[in-house]
Image (cartoon, rainbow, N blue to C red; front, side, top):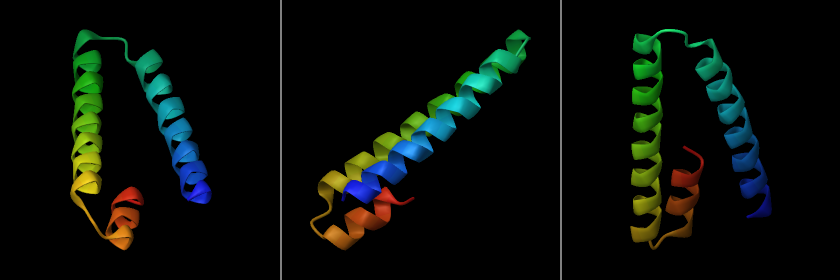
Length: 68
């Protein structure tokens, strides 16, 4: 479990760095709109994964969802 959390934390850090770079590179309003739309999609995907994990009773299924 701890390894999974560390892996997820590493991925989250990488995504954050990528997002921060993208945000600083976005110079026009259209670029910012695209950036925020992408972030919203990721957020919705994360919410969906969390909901599926809450509903799942099988630990293997939860692990599979976690690794997506």
